[in-house]
Length: 139
Image (spheres, one colour):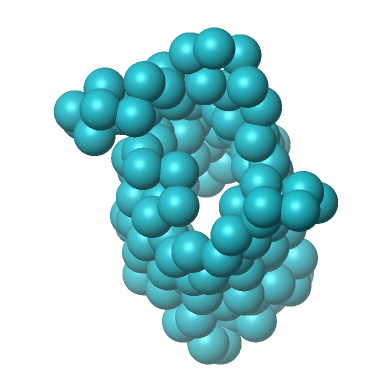
């Protein structure tokens, strides 16, 4: 038999897409379209994992921006539906001379199926002046 720790694994990865939520993005002239990918290191016996995110956003004028973020993720230890909170810090406009550091924080929920997990999360990003809603899959 497979133990709970083996079933959850130490590493998981996910990809998602989404848009802006709330009214904050209207003031910045940006529509909030984005794509993201992450890798999460989570030792099953600890409630907090470490996650590295990559983010690609598009503005209303089609300007692209990338970000690389490091987050701490607290997940409630519930078997099928797992709510979580995350907060972290990262570099926005990564790889450009005018790159700036900033924080992000949010909440999400992951629903496990037998094949993949489906997740939805809402996060506030200080540097890009937007709250983003992301829906994706993870493994």
